[in-house]
Image (cartoon, rainbow, N blue to C red; front, side):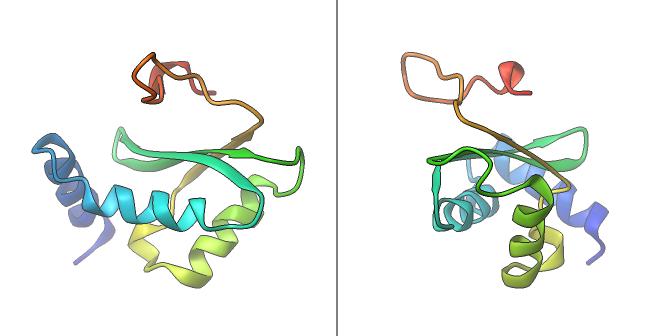
Length: 101
């Protein structure tokens, strides 16, 4: 399965409420040292991630992508990663994806 087909599959799973692939990537990111919070979503066919760190500048975006490449299938590696110290959330606790950098 090529990456385009997998991303279409992820989009279908997400829209049907079964975002298991997205949750697996998010779970991996949350398991990294110094990661306080993480969100993963699909945007225009690209897997994106936003990571909040306990300690500022502990990881760069590229280092997080490299860690993902070493542990996850290539089709589950986020193409875009943003690192910051805070994550905008709604009252419900869900990330406000449109507010992420």
